[in-house]
Image (cartoon, rainbow, N blue to C red; front, side, top):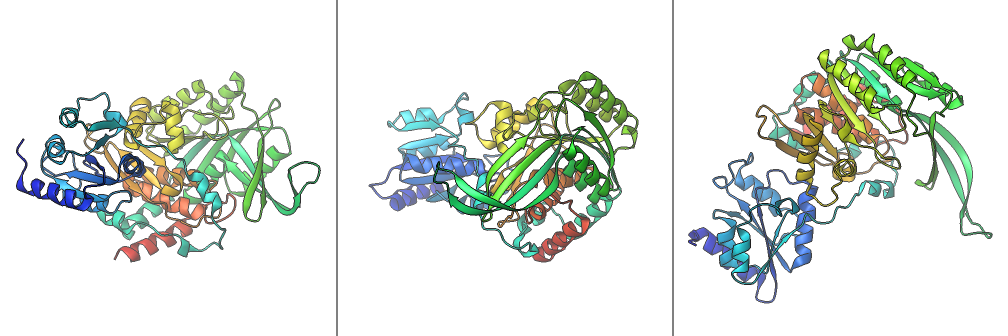
Length: 502
């Protein structure tokens, strides 16, 4: 071992900073893009000792780095849980031998790899731990925030992201104009969302339950219905294909779809209800949800009727969206047939498959142009609750064959992965959530998917499409209930972001 002089100086500085009574935990890596998976890793490292040290591999040692070492160090140095960070010019095992940290932490995905750090750790009796930290799904934290009046000032975009990817307000404006010329086909589950505002009376004396008095009720179009409404408002034309129950909720859904200017093919099924979700709210909180639905797959005859109806118009579509809420409207044979025909016509194909109170598998939508799962949905599809976020993204892309991936992280924003021009080198980045004061998180993912999908269809690279999707999600959560987004709402935020980046 022969450490460079700079590394020897770093070792001395670390030992002085840590003192003699604190256990040092060491982590090394490239850290191209800091994402919540890294936060979990750093938090886990802090739990293993008293002084967390991070070595950022220099550019010479990290040929896959797409960000300069100084910039990667700056990003790492600003993270919580880290006590000391520096640029590592030597191999991690050489630095470990000199520093002799009590613990070395690596991501769980490296456990089956060759790990030269092990010999270094064993030489002095340290320990090497593989873990990606505990996965915390924090999207429910949004529901604990106070409700505020809708205000564009609550939305804050990422100026640094714009500069890093060379995105300008003009390029975004051009995408918005191009989006308005696109024709979209949507197929999926229609949902009716009802918000019942209640006045809390108190606790029942008979049993430990909260007693409320309903004050008002508002019903919104949800599920694939609002996806088609967003696409109609942002694009030129939408053909929507769905199955409804022969009931009052189905009739109301059809009325709203027609009012929004959507061309609807709605088959009626006497064996199932129209999916209806009730949210009982009091004092700005959702207390209870009651869902009426069926998870039974639609019959083969209904599948054939939907497919035949779509084939009459698919040659006109620029974008095809699968909006799957897992209530039986999209059996696998139907998905496969539509995908094959859409690809043959040259349309971009986007898919989302919700896994919430119901079960789903986003990976069953194969070879999509874009998929937009939540982190939870991605992990469910892979049956992986412990792997690092980047590892999960890679595995999901390999399993599904998608070209672009956006993983939504609730209050933590989004994680993106793109194959780009070099098919052997994936590129990653992340964006924070643009709205830190959401009124209602429901529908954020739908808005994200539609805007990002239209952006890709308009020629935007993933980064630009994801930025537009993040704006759409921020606008959506700034109000209660699902209402179609407008180009004007997105344009306001594009202008504000462009001014801030100057």
